[in-house]
Image (cartoon, rainbow, N blue to C red; front, side, top):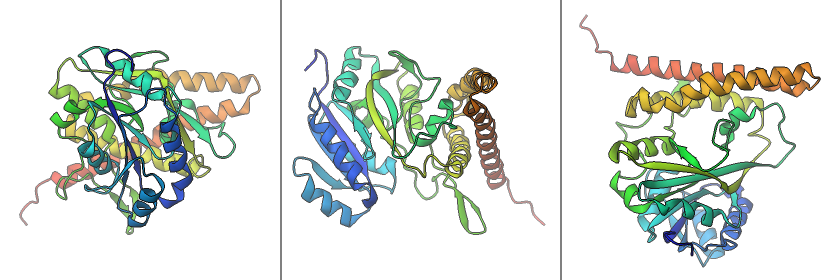
Length: 329
């Protein structure tokens, strides 16, 4: 084990039988780590049949049911509650870690001020790569995007599907925000259909709360700590792109309500003012040189930005309407 590397528990969250092959591949990648985890904990999110199947298939792992609210926040909190490690690393069931993934994350904890670290998520396309999707928007399917550092550097927050945090820090802030019935993020509905789940970006919310609780805390981004995140053909579709951009706007409006817009939107402002204009210019330049997909990427940046802004505005206005006092007739 590298000097100063904390003993680390790895938590894998899973919920869908259709991801079984991905889950098997994820667990196999954890067995191949150059720095073996202290333990592997698989949390099954409210799926009893999958829970029994996983318990039979992975005897070397702790396979437990999510004891919290349905969703990633509850699953990760359940995994953290069962973990024995000084640090806890999180990876999703549809991600496959490079052999030195955990070692690279662990090397980030040499300084006391470092509370956690995240790594790169590279798309593993199940179909043909979607050349029209700009790298600036790879976050729509949970992958690293243009604008993140290309070397070890501090960041506001890591991406939850590839991150590690000191167990003591996670416990100190109460884990990931799940929300009770009166505190749950809002859903947006139209004609009875949920148009946007309104979930909080729980990794961002968690990292900001850590910083508020521990001034001077540092989150590091280590692109050499790599996992390969599955991108299905459905996730590479234009409909999914639009929906995720809208939902992201809703989520950022909810996040601002909880932690304040100054911190909740700090990275987004830089992305909007610096990264996206460069992406549009680059795409248009590529189109002028004969690469039509460059023009498509430039257009997708504009459409994605508009969809995200629409989600943010609708969620914000919805929140204002809910808080407005009812006047007497």
